[in-house]
Image 1 (tube, rainbow, N blue to C red):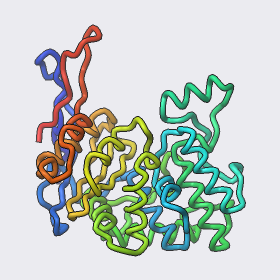
Image 2 (image 1 turned 120 degrees about the horizontal axis):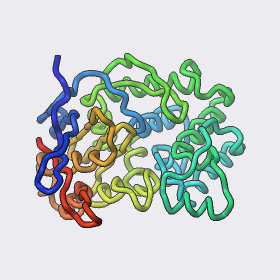
Image 3 (image 1 turned 180 degrees about the vertical axis):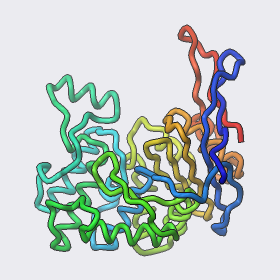
Length: 319
């Protein structure tokens, strides 16, 4: 059986003090596997990388949101004010309040946004949790279809069944595991190849719900993550790209020319995720494409190690 391999070295003062193990796959413009390292054909839990696919299931089920809010439905948002206001707009459109959300109360992911909430005397709330946009959209989809909202997270709920069907359709693989994600929603498994294939389908779509999802991400990338996130920097550096990061260091990116990438590390360290994606894009020649800001992409892949407050090393990809 294949195993995850060393995909990055932790280098301090010229000494390799550790490694990250993981797997990476790159699809070519025709959708075939161009290259891969590690394990790419066995099921993983893509975590929040699933969100654009889940949002597609909702749109197929009748959800009709403006592009900014549709992007928020795909998001692991930072909890900045415009994210929170957007989640409330989705709920308002369905005649619901924050009380309907079943996301666990949390602080904003963004440090500055969290500090602002604390300074204002706020507390952890469900709408501040990074998945509240997705959950608000799930609730709105239930209202549109007359489905019960109290049980919207149950795997056998009609909403989750539609999402599971959409997920299997886009990944081209059967769902072998249904876990529970950190937000409480069903978490569907697929391989890294299947995940890349799903993002490719969205990125090359010319019409229909798939194109709506892709265009929402392209037009409002800050709604998918936040104004200070590496994902935003990457998507704005590559014209037409779509992408989504997830917990446990999962990342998927696809281009309108059909190329697509997916990766995961075994240790789940978020610090290495952008390093690996930047290297995958470089290896596949994406940085040489017209219109791509190669320097900006490269910056997303830099992780400097400090010693005494000064740069003394880096995390570098090895494939």
